[in-house]
Image 1 (cartoon, rainbow, N blue to C red):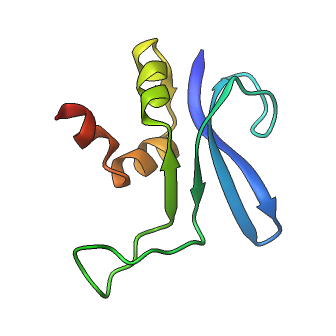
Image 2: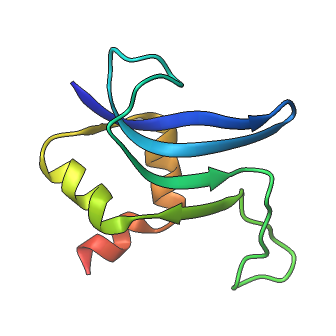
Length: 95
């Protein structure tokens, strides 16, 4: 089964994640098919609608490739689904 999940990069106490398409049997940081984006949880950005709130990290996505992998049956892990929801990926797809 194909999954869209996180692969950890970065150093000790400074995590950085790649959002990848990988076989569910592969190791977390092992073989993957394609890098679909990145997630940096330590890079806090101020939200546009509020000057006091901070979002939970910086997300960069290849939205066309994520859409493709979802269309061919890839499953999202809960953490990637949460990241995509916060990046408003599903709202953009509905429009």
